[in-house]
Image 1: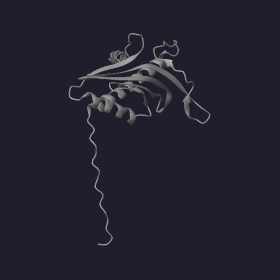
Image 2: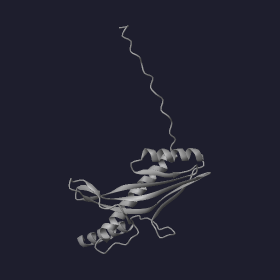
Image 3: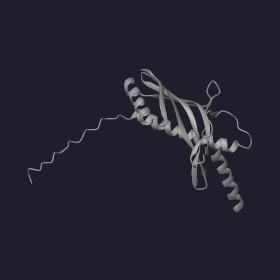
Image 4: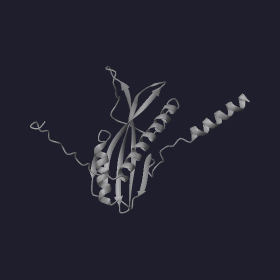
Length: 191
């Protein structure tokens, strides 16, 4: 009975491991995260304003390179963490390019050109980039580094998926200006 439970547990964990999501490939053989969203209720100008607002709100991770009245092109980065037992530290960063386009009734956005830049500790104990040139995520690693590279890919997909969900949520929600509170003047003449 114990052997049956162990075999069942191994098979279930192998099935869950195989269901991990990954980036699909585009026409050029590069990884891409691509979404097309119908938005009949929001007009084009509002979508562009909300997209610009999202980028300025998250300017430490994404910055605009080019913007027009129907498209935005930006560059960004996200930090990949490595967890050992309980402690975690940054193992590197993934740089990407972000594109956003609007048409009447729908919009699309995609993340592409993913590059990994590894981190290492400097003499002060801070984690800094080892080099300025990144390694494309499509590159096949050596057999010794395959497991670590797979973990980097999974973590990068999770981070990009979260950024995309936040972006889509910010485009769907309407921001209303907050009313300023009326300041009460304090009179010292009356008491």
